[in-house]
Image (tube, rainbow, N blue to C red; front, side, top):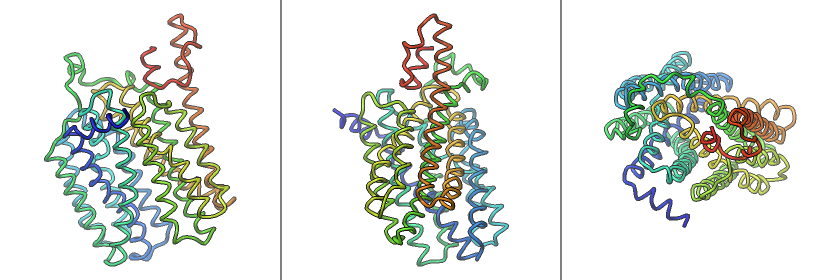
Length: 414
C-alpha cells in the first residue's frame, strides 16, 4: 500500500526529527530572501537593480561555497563544519540589517560563503536514517516540506515586515535561523551510514572517479528544474500584473504549490516512478503553455498541472545523486548539486524577464519551459551515449538498455 511507505518513514524517530527541523530551519531562509529585497528598496531607498545585486552576491557566494563545504562535511564531520558557520553568519547578520547598502552587500556575500549547509545536512541525515527501499519516499517527504516552507516563509516575513522595521525582522529571522542551526549542531545527526573497511580507507577519493557523465546529468536535471521554477515565479508575477490581479497572486502561487505537494506525495508512494528525464520534460512542457491562460482561473489551472511535476523532478534528481556517487563523497557531491540548483535559480528569473519584456508573460513561461526541455534532451543524450559505449564494450546491444531507464539502472548496467 502506498501509505505504508509514508508510515514507515514517519515512524522512524530520526527521520521525523530531521523533517521537522528541516521545516523549521527553512522558513526563515525563504523569508529573508524575499524581505531583503524589500529592505533594500524601501528602507535603504535603493533601486530594484541594487536589491538584485545583493541577492546575486549572496546567491553566488552560496554557489561557490557549496562544494567546498560539502567536502568539509565528508572529511571533518557535521559539528566541526557547522559551528564556525553559525558564528560567522550570526555575526554578519547581527550587523548587516542596520548598516548602509555597501556594507550590507559585503556582509551578505560573506555570510553566503559561510552559510550553514542545512539542505545538504538534512538530506544526508534523512538518507542515512532510511533504508534503500524507503529512501525515495523519505526524500519526497522532504521535498514536500521544502514546498511548505517556501509557501510559508515569505508570508510570515512580509507580514511582520509590514508592521515592524524590516531591519529588525531580518535580524530576528536570521537569529532564529542561527538558533535552529545550533540545534542541528547539538543533535548532530549521523550524515552517513556505517562505511565498510574499503570505503573507510578511501579517505580522499579522486574526483575523476565519481564526477562522471551520469553525475553531471543529474546536476543538469536539478539545474534545469530550478531554471523552470525560478523563471515561473517571475512569470506568474508578470501574469498577475497583466490581468490587473496582483492581489490574487498569492492564490495562484498557493495553487501551484499545492500541485507540487500532491505530485510529491504520489511520487513518493510509487514503486516504479518515471525516470528523472521524463519528469523534467513533463515539468517543462506543462510550464510552457501557462502563457495561454486568459485570467486568474487559467493561471491556477495551468499552474496546478505544472506544479504536479515540481517536487517529483527535484526529488528524482536528489535520489539519483545518492545512487551514482559513493557515500564517502556524498557531501561534496551534494554541494556541487546544490551549486547547480543555486545557479539555476540565478538564471531562471533573468531569462524569463528578458522574454517577458519582449513578449509578455507568455514569453517568460515559454522561454524557461523550452529551456528545461532542451536541457533534458542534452542530459538524456549524455547518459545514452555513455550507456551505448559501455554496452558496446561489454558486447551487449545498446537497444537492450532503454534510454528511459533511470540513472541507477544505467549504473548497474555498467
